[in-house]
Amino acid sequence: MLPQPCVLLKYGELALKGHNRGLFEQHLLHNLEYAVGDDTSVRIRRRAGVLVLSSSRMPLHELVERARQVVGISVVQPGLRVAKDADDVAAAAVRMLRERFGAGDMAHAEYSFAVRARRRHKGFPLTSDQLAAHVGQRVCDELGWPVDLKTPEVKVEVEVDRNEVFVSLERHSGQGGLPVGSSGRALALLSGGFDSPVAAYRAMRRGLRCDFVHFTGAPYTGPSSSYKAYALARRLNRFQGGTRLHVVPIGSAQRSLATAGAGQLQIVAQRRLIVRAADVLAHRLGAEALVAGDSLGQVSSQTLTNLANTEAVSSLPLLRPLLAFDKDEIMSEARQIGTSEISTLPDEDCCKLIMPPRVATHSRPEQLTRLEKRLDLDELVEKLLANVQVLAPDELAATSEE
Image 1 (cartoon, rainbow, N blue to C red):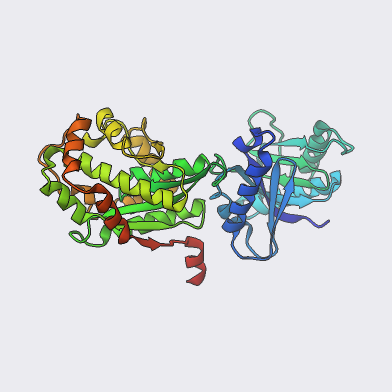
Image 2: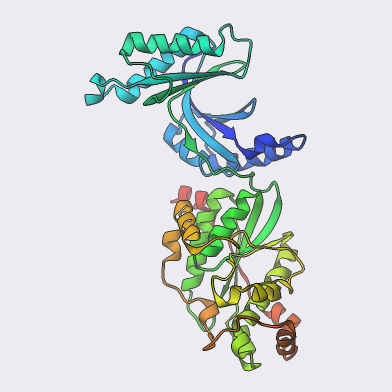
């Protein structure tokens, strides 16, 4: 077997699953196949507790980057796949070190190193310690590097499997969590701010496949918020594929609430209307929950009382992954997942379209019920959903077309 570049993909939480692990793995494989696209040269091999990704055409660094977007994978480890022979393993380790550190000034530098060997298949003739010592001796002989088993500058990882051995020098963090789709489907409320995209991402990491719904202030606002929602949905699509964004114009309904005398209850009443419409849409899509980016006490509409009164109108669970997050934590995660720059773009937020001078922080159910009785809510929701626009921001397809 010639040394072959490959990428080891290691499970995190998924590895702890018992008899249902096969179902989780099926979702992970499906998502990984989407991530690598239509390249027929890519091969995915299943091994004990790991997946092995390789391609005869796609560069290794691109395989790594695509695999790092897949939720459910905790470690992405590029390396070489070599024959199950101690000398071949040692030669591969020296080759990799020379390729990485053998150019320019690095060719004359010395780095402390250690070899970490692990046998997933115990039929290999050498123990883990013996294999590590064999590889380490070869590195010392050919490169002259000193061994440091406690705090090495370079780690050589060797993993023995049933039919081959994997040698690697680096590992990258993956998304972790559970494979998207393994926990069911949800409809995520997506605004143009920082919170809702992070909430949706958090839901995905718990195994939920998310569609999105965005409520725009049209016809009283321009399309800027819809553009932002599309860009955010497209960015989040990297983690799951097949995303659908539903854009619902709510401006006229907001006017109806204001005309009915909402006053200080305007924002909470709007939120209840949004949740009602999202709940109906979710049922039509087969979703089993709603996801919102609420953070307790962050704004006036997110006091405990207002959150409870908003949730009361949904027949589905209303999940709030960011309930105990503060703004700095949310913005930090937005930067990590790549939604922060999009969220900073200017837009016309539908919630600010009709903003009362003062927002009720402790709304009462009977107040909201009296207000809503002045309107035919069922008819209002049907009108909203009759004008829904469905978009498919499939990022990988768009990239390949370009």
